[in-house]
Image 1 (cartoon, rainbow, N blue to C red):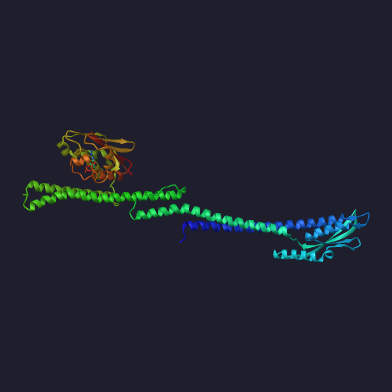
Image 2: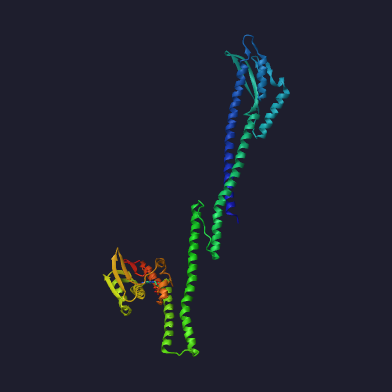
Length: 462
Ligand code: ADP
C-alpha cells in the first residue's frame, strides 16, 4: 500500500507531466507551423530582393552588367542557399554560380537537402525565373534555384533546437517542483493523519492521555483531530465512571456486610446473646442492603434503553402535596415547619415518577434539616414550565460539592459525618427522571444555612 505522501507526490507529478507534454506538443506544432510559414515568406522576400538587386546592376548607358557587383550578389545569395544564373536580354549567360564554384554549390545544396531530410520535410530543389527590366525595357532574366517550398538555414535550426531545449528544461524543473511540492503537501496532510491514527490506536489500548493539537491549517484535519479528542474524552469519562461505579458499589456493600458478618459471628460463637436488639440491628443492615440494591435496580431501569414514561396530564401541586403527606410522620418527628404555596400546574408527565422525584427531594430536605427547621415548597407556572422549588434550612452543601451531588454514590462530607444513611443514589434518580421529562433540576445552597432545589418541567411535554 502506498503512503499518502507518495500518492499525492505521484498524482501531482503525473498531472504535471501530462500537462507539460500536452503544452509542449501543442506549442511545438503551432510554433513549427507558424515558423515554417514565416520562413517561406522570408524566402520569397529574399528571392524578390535578389532579383531587385540584380536588376539595378545593369548599366543602361554602357548596355552591360556591372559584373563585380553581380558576382558579390551571386556569392552572397549562394551562401544563403540560392543558386543564381543571370542571363542578358538575348538569353546569353552573364553569371552562373555553378560555373563559378561548382564544388561550393554542390556542398551547399547537399547540406540544405540533408538538413531538411533530417527534419522530415518533403521537398526538393526548384527553379524560379524572374524577368529583369529597366525603364520598362527587358534587360535580362535571373533563374534562382532553391530548396522548395522552403528551407531553413543553420540559425533557423538553432532557434527550433533552443526552443525544444527550453521546453525540456521547463519540464524537468516543473517535475522537480512537483515532487518537492507533493512531498511537502503530502507530509503536511499525512503527518496529522498518522498522528490521529496513532492516538486512535492508543485510545483502543486504553491510553487516553495523548491529545491531538489542532493547527494543521487544514480544516478537515483539525476537525478530525478534535473529534478524536472528544472521543477520547468521552471514553475516558466512561472508563472513569465504570471504575468508580465498581469501587462505589463494593464500598457501599462492604459496610453493612462487615457489620452483619461480625454480629452474626459473635452470636454463633456464643460471645453475644442473640437479643432482640442485636437481631434488630442485623435486620437494619439487611434492610440497608435491600434498599441499596433496589435503588441500583431502579437507576439501571431508568437509565436503560427500554425505560419509558407513562405520560399524561398531571398536576405538580397535588403530586407535591401527596409526597409531603407521605412524609408527615418524619416531619412531625423532627418538628419541622412545612409550608406549601402555589396553584395547580398541569404538565405532561409520569405521575408516579414525578411523585418519586418530590419524595426523594423532600426526604433529603427532612434528612438534612436539623430539628425545629423549616421546609418551604412552592409550585408555579413560569414561562410555559411547571416549576417546583423545595427549600430547607438544613446543613447546606459546600459550593465546590454542588456540581457533584447528582453523580451516583456521591455524598457530601457533612452527610457522611452525620451518618444520615443514604447511598447517594437518590439525586441521580431524580435527575434522570426530570431529564427524561425534558426538564431541568438546579441546586442552590449555602453551607449551614440551607439548600434549594428547583425542578422545572415543560408543560407541553418533550
Ligand atoms: P442520599 O441518599 O445520600 O441522600 P442523594 O443522592 O439523595 O443521596 O443526595 C446526595 C448527597 O447530596 C447527599 O448525600 C447529601 O450530602 C447531599 N444533599 C442532598 N440533598 C440535600 C439537602 N437538602 N441538604 C443538604 N445536603 C443535601
